[in-house]
Length: 334
Image (cartoon, rainbow, N blue to C red; front, side, top):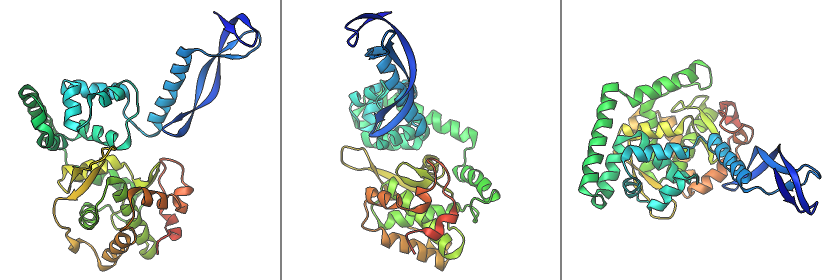
């Protein structure tokens, strides 16, 4: 294929070569192998809109893979399941244009992505959205959505899905492999979450850091965890292993609920369903929880994330890898 080469100042034969390139995605440089058009005579790189778009899409896909994000086809499939983009956007409190952008390849912000995951995985979350935004739907849409919720709930009952047992199974292997020193305790997880949410206005990011500090500070002081979860290096700081699933199980078990937070980012405040049952904790464990709560009381989600980024265990652990509890001795809290 011939194309005009500004370096040669004439049309020349061209070829496509492969090379490493870095593209900024959400402010982060993402490296991919790109297809680049070059002049066959002088090897000057030539602009080609189709190749550039394909390379940029590779970078977006690499970013999605890195952070385990839903793809545009996943989002289209979700919309198709509910019947229309208008219904999904109305339920979530978004503009329809926002959903269309995500279907066409734009990457959702974290809060919107969390909402999409819950919409896909948790029929009880859909019920809560229906109670909040159902008055904006047509009668036909209400009937369709109610049937869909009933079908999903019925399917889960048929499958006998027990969120507590699923968490127990997931975390059991980490005790066996010596990654944690304490058997996972759902009651302690539930009541630690309630304790923090009961005394502070929490979004999910901050809650995840509070749990990390509780388990790591307990290990530092007493050589064992409170809840018994492993934590992984995440872009926003340490989070529980498979944190989205843990959060969904807390919602499905009616331990917590979420309330939309006004603002441009679609974040949600975590609210406890009941007061905490502190009798499940030892005196030492309760002291740990109180220490963590009081230390981070005035921190925003961004501030506690930035604080956690300074932890030696976080700094020396690769992305998405489990942070070893051996690093508890270097924890910035005492």
